[in-house]
Length: 416
Ligand SMILES: [Zn+2]
Image (cartoon, rainbow, N blue to C red; front, side, top):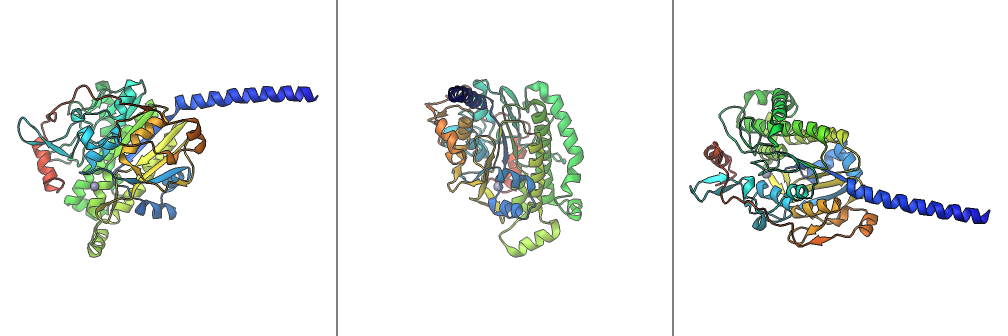
């Protein structure tokens, strides 16, 4: 009997060894990432709302994952920040140094365009390695780039109608918004659907009287909210339908309302709350519902990541930006005492996918979020570089709206 037990035990051990090797390999090959970028989300506001049980989906994500404060190791605003997140490099390398740039041919200021980015974003790196990506609404992504998968870009645009949007949005009548172009018809449907619903949804965020009065800050919020709704509608549907291995969506509205409806001045804050309601808090609650929709749709073996580029409280950017990751290989209910930087996100994603990090990236793998066991079995591997982009434009691509856009940015005080 003893001999048979020994044999059975050895067989079981060998089988177990095979299963564990197999599952480890499968996990690395299959691991997916769903990345939700939220401009201006702040732990100082998010944390109390979670504790008051008002944000059940963020609560679930935080409990099931690892969280950290993000260090905005970059200057000059969101266009730069989100490019640094995408490339793992600072502006000195990726070349997107602000919202606008002087066109050397005309000496006019124009918004940066994606073809001016000198280095590869994670979607370029992954596409070249045959990994499918879906990228929705990312800052400085127009014209849409040819990726393995699809991209719905973000475009600063302007008009005298309600279409006007703040940081960027998508328009049916502008070329280069969508890659591949065959997707345009489907995207037009999402735009239409979002336009039909957004005012009703916004009435949950801004007081009805103020929404009707439609003053400047309300109009600006409408643009940003419509933009978030369009990208969210497109992202959720495309994620459900196509579920690429790495899927990323960027939402801008929280930053826009934070700047307009909160103030360091207490009297001003009382006035804003009385007139518009607690718009910033309600936008957090809206984003919790948005996150809940993704969590319902999320596929197996997926790390869900939420990151903001900086925090925003009382009308000003803070250093309390949010980073949360949850899923296979990630610690649970863990608060990382160290800060993650903007440029750490791209290398961290590559490591998650079992790919080497490039030594010319300024960030490093943020190891604090990973299970010890995973770190022991998976060393961080390096290569010198993923190379530069082959076609880099020295000047921004032209759009019919450029001058009006710059005027708009000036009026709003985002540029001088
Ligand atoms: Zn901001």
